[in-house]
Amino acid sequence: MSARRITVLLLAISVIAGCGKGANDSQPEDPVTENGGGPAADNRVDGFTVQTLATGLDTPWDLAWGPDGHIWVSEREGTISRVDPATGAIVRVGSIGAFELSESGLMGIAFHPDFESQPFLYAVYSYNTGDGIRNRLVRMGYDGTELARPEILLNGIPGAPNHDGSRLAVGPDNLLYLTTGDAQSPALAQDLNSLAGKVLRLDPDGKPAEDNPFGTAVYSFGHRNPQGLVFHPSTGRLYSTEHGPLDNDEVNLIVRGGNYGWPGVRGLCDNDVLTGETAFCSSNNVVEPLAVWTPTIAPAGADIYTKDLIPAWKGDLLFTTLKGQALWRIGLSSDGLRATSRENLFNGRFGRLRDVLVGPDGEVYLATSNRDGRGQPRTNDDRILVVTP
Image 1 (tube, rainbow, N blue to C red):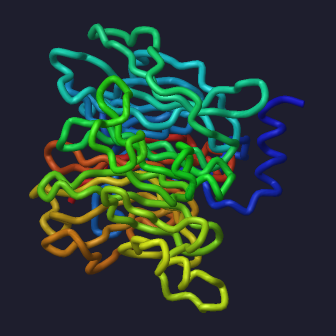
Image 2 (image 1 turned 135 degrees about the horizontal axis):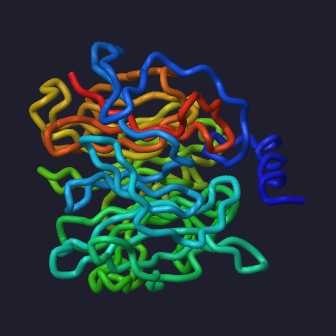
């Protein structure tokens, strides 16, 4: 049986709100049209202009603004490309032999903090050991045209068809932060000897940061499947989005050494004492999320809006949703410690949304994820959309 048939079978029995690969019949195009060069003709959605920048992508996972002024995109089957934000032209710069099954494959990418002198791109992807799926962190040199062969920095991160994480972010300390899922083994999230269900903190060579709280790569733990990770450029605070089971998707403020509760508790510590969650919270110093969603919406990529182009969004957390098929805007308190408001945008208009990226002039880019096996692909999916006032 082929991997694609296996994937479809897994997804047919799955109740997880993530993103699995498979085939679907194409659906009619939504009102955002193509113009053949650069962003498509103007279309108003929820008071914003939404245009199609690039088309024909195969399950894009991460969007990153490159030092070269282009959008870099990873596709889960293993391709890494540059997208010209002016024309939408896509240029492939490298590929990785990723093992793509359900939610596994090529995931997060990030640039070395000193890219000018050390032109490395980091990436996380899944591979098949023969007796199971694992994930690894690699880096690749870039010569201005193409990426070099991957150098393995961290190997053997627990993986599975679902719950692999793996978002990358470079912190204000110039260290690399990496989310990992629980690899469908919930107990691993509380196991400090496992790299699963964690936020890891690494130096540029992939080694544990020297001042990490547990003397290992682990920075925080108790995570189920965190798929968004972003630093606030003004406050330096670190936020993540995380998939719950069938309830309590979360937005979290990540703190050093924090226990985020999974699987002992999901969401807030306000559930019936009979479930044991209240006792678990109090005895394990669980860090509660800033916001929760039930029913689940499957939150994915995140970014912070700090530009002037859309003044009402300034300082807010943006994140995309897969099951929820929307862009969410979360207002943050001035100290970044509380969520003060929430707004749902573009609900169902473009299908499943995997990532969001704020451009240097304040425009907002969205990556669709309609070819991941759980969506209904529209004409020319998957796409990168650009949002402006």
